[in-house]
Length: 364
Image (tube, rainbow, N blue to C red; front, side, top):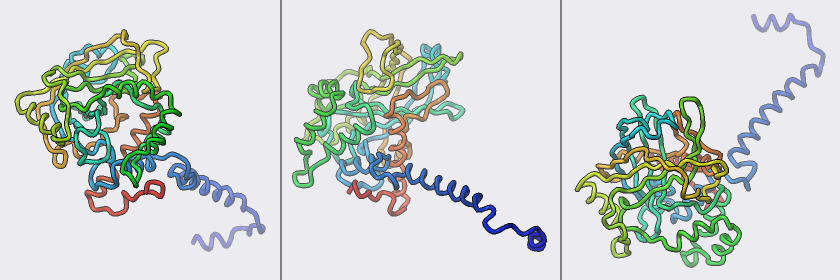
């Protein structure tokens, strides 16, 4: 019927309607170009999450199947967050009410080598996932340092490239490292801090900083720029330093401490004032800013990361509940995208899907 109907219709003049196909073809080509650009295929110099994760992978000594490409060495912890209601006037997020929320967390070392000795780097990290009764989540990744070295994904990538090990020596090229920091004066605050930083022998005596700014949103829709950190209540052994003689002291220590009793931190939320930078993690806010004690983080159980509840969690810092919003910090979407790429690689390796973790040409 369709064929006979078509044959009975007036014949079109040759060439008529060509423009419709041109428009359709152009649209398809445009979509292909857009996807190609987003993927980096047609813009090889463009920074993509894949290139960042490739660089992290190289810095970590290559592919370690099934492990995160950054913060590869770690341990799962669980417990709860006890809100006290103090932050509820600034945010409608359910976690800040006077309620108890379950937490799945992870302590870790920076870097992509899951076998690195604990003394190899002076920074420790803590990631948390809080889940409300209705399933709403807040995920955050914090580091035991008060300031980030760079302000943009491009600078972070340049730092990775400048500090990656030289194949001949196994160590970064001092000239490249010096050139990078010389070209990036925004790293000054981090360099000042790192001079006195030492690799602690305990995860539980560290303060962990969110570094990036976010917005709290109250019931009226008013936004307040904030940064948060957790500060330990336990201080015994705070000055102890990890040594090469005990390469796994951190997991041993946290296991022993939690076995003896829950470990606790105060969640402190700092409120920005007009003029404070909310899109630059290299800049510290003035110490006199108002800070709220929003509640207590309690960690009371520890498990190995290969079988514990943190194993399959992507601690994407842009997974936020109603009442918390991302700021304009360009590191946040970059972290989210890179975490997703890393998650795909390691879970694909665990599932036996070949080829996902293959290094790009530049990452080899």
